[in-house]
Image (cartoon, rainbow, N blue to C red; front, side, top):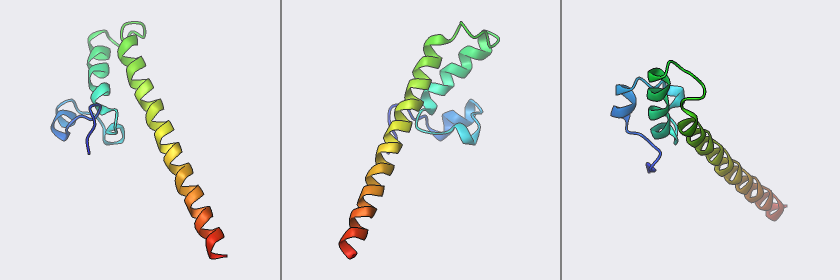
Length: 83
């Protein structure tokens, strides 16, 4: 299920986003890369886009860690119930 921060495959191909960067925050990466190219990668020019992309990456990381913790707890409970 695509979220509002996920770009379509056609958009990703059009903007030549590498496969390893096509994740849940890909829609935020496209304008960041456009801004970087337009400003010749000057670090202070694209702060807002970079911050939004990094925040999305961090929130995605937290979501995945919570899911992993839930799976680990469920596995431990299942092992305890079988013993």
